[in-house]
Structures are given as C-alpha cells and as structure tokens.
Length: 447
Image (cartoon, rainbow, N blue to C red; front, side):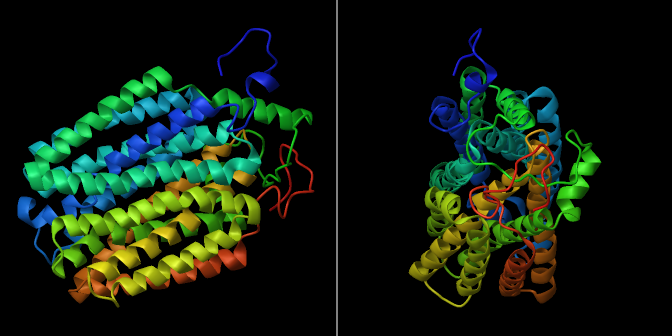
C-alpha cells in the first residue's frame, strides 16, 4: 500500500492480510528463499561428510560441530536483529542478512576441511538470524492480532516447504554434478534472487508497529483486544526484555523452553536421522525423500495448524505438537524400511507444524508493539540456541554410547517433558480466547 499525503496513519498503516496482501506475499517469497538456503545442507552434508571431508563415522560431535556454530550465531543474532530492527527498520536488517550469505557458497566450494563448513555455517547463522527473523516480524507488523496464527503458519509453511524442496533438489543435483558444485550453483542463485527481490519489492513495516502502538496508547484500537504481558515499561532496555521473556514471565519462559526442545529435535532430524538412514541401507536420494517429506509435511501442515490456533487457542496445539513429535522420534528407531521411515517423517512433520508457528504467535500475542520485535528476538534466541544445545547434548550421547539410537530416546524424553512444562505453566495467549474481554493497555496485565 503506497504512502499518500493527507491519509491518516490509522488508514495508511491499517493491519490485515487482505489490505496488505502484496507486501505479505513478498515477505512469504523472502522466507521461501531463506528456507532454500537452509535446506540445501540437510541431505547432502551429513551423508557426504566422511566422503568429502574425512569425518570419521563415529565422530558424532565433530560432525555436529557445524550445527553448533550455526545455532550459537543464529540464536544470538535473532535477539540482535529484533533490537536492531526497532532502531533501523526491518528491511535494512533483512538486506544485511542476505549480504552475510554471500560467502557461504564460496566457502563450501573451496573447503579444504570440515572446519570450512563450520565457518560457512557461521555466515548461514547470520543470514538466518537476520533474514528469517525479519520475515516473521514484518508479517506480525502488518496483520491483525486474530490473524497471527494464520500469518505465522503461512510464513513457516513457506520457509520449511522450501527446506524440504531444497533437500530433494540438492540431493539430485549432488548425484548429477557433485556435492560442491551443486551447493555452489544452488546457493548463489538463491542469494542473487533474494537480494534483488528484497531491494525492489519489500517495504519497511516498522511504521505499522508504531501505528499499532499509538492506537493502543490512545484507546482507538478496533477489533479484538490483546492482553499484553505486564511488568515492563513501554520502551524497555535490552537486558530488561531478555530477562523478562527468558525467565521472569511464566508464559514467555514456557514458550522459550519449548522452542529449545523443538530445535533439539530438529538437530536430530537434520544430521543424525539422515546418517541413521544411510547406515541402514538407504541411498542418498531415498534419504533426501525422507528428509523432504519431513520438511514438506512440516511446511504444508502449517497452513492449517496456524489458522487452527486462531480458532482454539495456542496452548493445545503446542502441547499436542510436542507430544506428537516425541512419538514420531521414538517410532523412527522402532520401525524399519523405507515406507515406514517415510511415515515417521510425516508424523514428525505434523508434530512440528502444530507447535512451530503457534509458539511464535503466542509470543506475539502478549508482547507490546513497542518491544514485540525484541520479545520475538529473545524467544528466537532460545529456540535457535537449541540447535547448539541439541548438537552438543546429542553428539555427546551418541559419541559416549557409540551409536545413534540413544540420541533418539533422549530427544523423545526431552519433548515429552517440554510438553508437560507448557501444559502446567503456560496461560492461553490468544486475544480472542482466554483474554478476549480484558482491557488492552500499553502495559496491560499479567498473562
């Protein structure tokens, strides 16, 4: 919606998917491209680590080192991106994320050792922390409170469908042209398209967040009234937001630990599951299909799991998703055969879809517009640091036991306990459910 002179801010920066459809679509294109860049590694690198980089089959911790570097950088930069975007804008941070991606294909194609891949994933972490974070924040900026399950569902559908498609595409390309050439061409093309579309078509959405803040402050907000978490000033500092979201507020802290748990599971499925399948006789393309079904079912299912939470609330889908994912992880080492593993991948993908967009939507529900991006950044810090935590813990478990299977059981137990934590500690956040008739103020009350 182009800016116009003389148009009141309430009309110029109206929220809703319909009135901002063009911008919403371009943001979805951006997260699809971010997902392609992430997904290109998911099938090829774990299986070819020993062949191309000399990683010993039993060196699980060494193999997972590239996920540790990715998770630490992405987690930290999620928080940095959230704070930075409240100062310099969402689009600028998005562009910085794509500029940081430029060295990735070069480092992969020129890699002399596995540590080059670790270095490439530092840049991938920067890209993900800045670029993916801004697609989420921008969609939340321009949509209404009652649409955030749908908005985050579409966002994560686009991103994780791309992860699945990229895993399939790069597996095929690697067989045809070799792993390094395939990843170089694929990544370079994605980065060029992303930079051009971000520069030409993506708009700055920070004015929408500021207009929403002003409507709540003046009491002119129309529609469902959110119930913002209380206990922070309108413009809190970085340490205040981080501490508040991380551990001071029971609902926020429950959401953060659930984010860690889901990325521990995703670490397992990113690295150890393909290796497990390969060791049990599946070829590279078959492994790519199993990984692809996981990513595609995760992505596609979010088209209904996000809107579902707009109807029934966030808490029930999150708990169900954690427990369904736990069941899928446990089943993956109890079954045998290509078809059975495809079935467990589908189950795990649906579990991820139930929890993933709704954790984001729940954080956005109760975070005030003036510090919402920082709250999302804090949640995403803990969620994506889960990659590093998961890689370290699961790597040590597999290394100590000399087998991959114990890592699956540790992950399943972790997810089960995480679901119990959410069930006991999280209050429903959806503004149309538990908090529908309570007053909306800039500082709100406790949720």
